[in-house]
Length: 360
Ligand SMILES: *Cc1c(COP(=O)(O)O)cnc(C)c1O
Image (cartoon, rainbow, N blue to C red; front, side, top):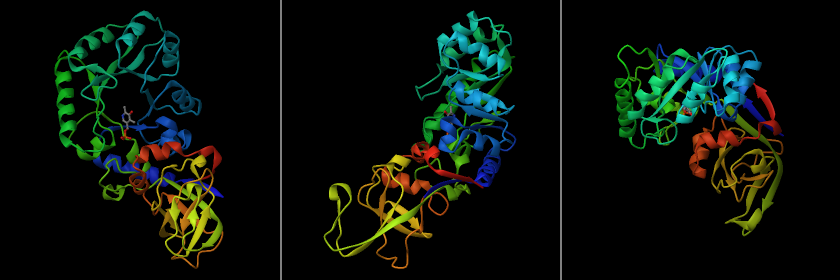
């Protein structure tokens, strides 16, 4: 049996932590990719005190409206074609405008109600957005559109989410300030810069909106500092049961490819979880797991539906014991570090529909 627990109290606690770092700012809780794999509607309900929700595309925004959420909803990819514009208007959704073609669409598509726009400045990530010296022109053309709702929000996104070089963010922040200075003095705008890493590292950035993602889910945005340093609580806990126990002799080759050869007689447990459920296939021998709350390790290769763990030091552990793969008691950063990936990716791969889900 496998379960995924989504601790909604932890979500609320983490939102309070965002407010601690960004007092008085509006919070756009980032819910893209099914709320980082935690479940869009469950998370939106738990975070309904946030002022707004950020999603990647229109379908996620419409799911939130269909569920009755009246919040500001910002669609990060914005609109792509003329047929989408009336949908933004009808459902009162905000669109990120990051490229020329979108301005042209807005100029040429008659819509019944004006729509709200977040204009994106590319301050150095080179992904979406207008270059700093193109912002004044984009702003002028947008604000001349009859179909634009005022005030517009000017936003940027930080490339250095993991703070390998704190100067990158400082430089981007200066570029953003520069873009604001190119706008007409009387222009009324809102502003939004920081993701989780920015919220924690640059509390002095004084913008209207912050856009936390990973910290709401209780994981650290930084590779080198655990979430507990920021008093964040794990939201998702994955557990599976021990379905078999094997006593194997010295020299036994374990699992697919026999990549692990037992250096001594060992006691192994097999748990009912695998890469088919979203556990990273490349997790190496030594990746930590908790059995009955105590730390042990994965042995050999991950199978589609099964994983070997080392029970040599746990003679008392019996069939049906509960094994935690990550979450409460085992921060997801530790798994991400062992695998060489990000907690973001691990969250997104969890096959929620295949697991029994409990919300607290
Ligand atoms: C995903 C995302 C965020 C949140 O980033 P975290 O590192 O998870 O806090 C903020 N802004 C934009 C534009 C995003 O796409």
